[in-house]
Length: 396
Image (cartoon, rainbow, N blue to C red; front, side, top):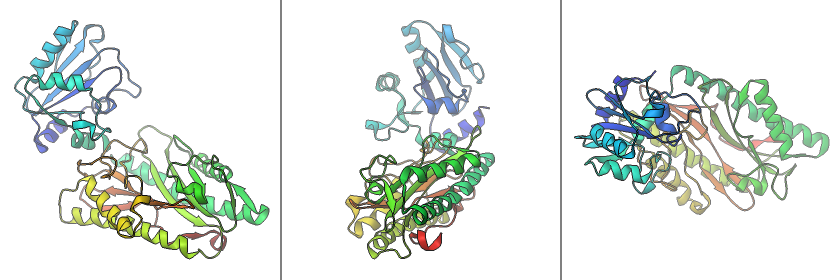
């Protein structure tokens, strides 16, 4: 159910005079979720919903779809002609100063930029100071309910166990046959997910040697996909419970098909792990001191470690992403590389920290999940931190 009081409290918290939510043919998934529209909802005409920090909300809907926002509180206004649409918008936002919309200056944050430039221009022409609604979106899209948090923990248990399934399967196949294909390991993980009623939008990544050096490698499509003794293997997996509203777990670990890990792998792993741990420390320090923390600052804390070790050019993606009903969620990301993420990391939100170093011969990534509790407690979920590369033939 849409919570008007919570929305207006959030507007006051972040200093907005109002929030204008706009959608055309499903263009604004974020607004749809805040407005509690059903999954897969698509209308054929533009609609707008304006929530002032004080007072009654206003709806603006087309005559042939005039019931689209009937589940929401506020006065309904109906337009037919485009002139009536523009006049209706002007009337809604008249006198509103700082106005939130799903907009990002210069499209600096495309994750929240869901309103077209022309509509933003129109609203600005009515005297409004249009500002990004990113922190509002993080509150209403990325904060987890207790039920969702429980679903995340359940997914973490299965995902954490999936690594043991993968390492054991590799070890058994190496001993029995001398080798195993990446896709066969991937299949073993997917069977594990199915047995525990988890679902995922895409099968996990299993990358041997140089294939693990491609951050978004498609398993089974490399030049050399056969895993053999003395090979290095990266496994990145993600899944959630197969039920509405469930939240993902997303983890990455690495293993060596042998009994002792060569120093060249250990050295790179240690740098990646140090970056990961610097990110955890950054988050914990900020919340312990009750200091606001923007996503870009965590990215810097992690990236600085890897750059200082001389491998900055090999860390080619952001440090982490928001996570929720989608693996890559709509809340605050940890990014000062691909975007300058100025949104705040908020309590009751979930995200990954996943630095990597991707070399031509192999790649190392260490991915963990972090949840910020309502009281500011920072929890690493998904099992214990990986502190060393798994010795597959010694441990399984």
